[in-house]
Length: 400
Image: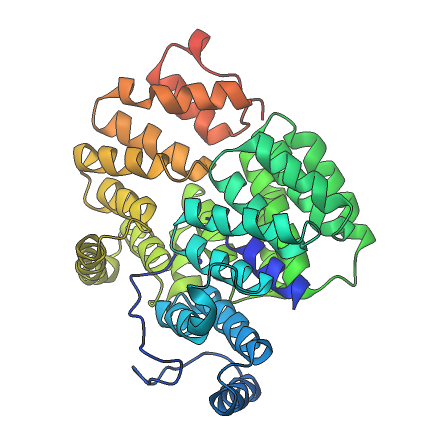
């Protein structure tokens, strides 16, 4: 899921995560974390938590702590931060009518765990009470875009045009357009808006540039996309979403060495570890193959633990693991299809098409092909795969 939008929502108004352990109180120490944040930021968070211990019913303090912990969960991929955020909000978590901001934060945590229906319910309750809540509209738009509910996403974006800044709404509209037959127009408008908003926040500009790079990737404009991914990473070199998206682009360009360079020290997040393993496999040097064995074992352990937890938030990564690293299309296909019932982004569609081909079950891809036709989804990679599944005359036309 495009978790960059959630960071934008948090920053305007102030993830792939494993199964979390929920502490009994906000102050319980489960483990000492290497946060990866500056000492100043760590000290500020420690100070806020110290204040909260003295005033446990102070929602203003609790919301500040929870917001920072959610930000850290997204930035690091460490699920414990989400658990601490939930524990911080415990006094308000189960209230039938908690403060509006508690509802929005609860929705953000729930959607990070792919509990989209409950998160949506929280957001709808928020908007009944506070129709102008920008963060709620942004989070609702993020969920709708991930789930392929484009009419609903369009309505959320329309609400935001009156409430959010022009770069945010243009980026959202361009992303929606790229999924519904207006990629060229969206890319042009977003490029123009970026030129008009040079002083926007780092988070917002990086997200917008990444979105533009993804649109150009789907249109087959590799040179433009490469430059834009690099520009986004210059602004925010540690953003996991941009890193993952750029590495997918590089893998498609057979540039595994560049992926290894980018991800060599990034092993905490499953999605980035998966891409590192794919890059090692692609490059195929003796040291790569030796490292690959350990990476595959580690990923298998993580996915097994995820299945035992009963959570389904890693289905996209697990399907990709089974398909690309275990080379088991028959096992990957049902996982990819189950993931498709939850998430319907272009990468999810691609997984189903690739797994259906690998499993020699092309008929299983019919719902995805229909979705592409219905929404006029533009993506050169999906077009190539579709042509392999059905005769070219029956495939959805997706112009580069």
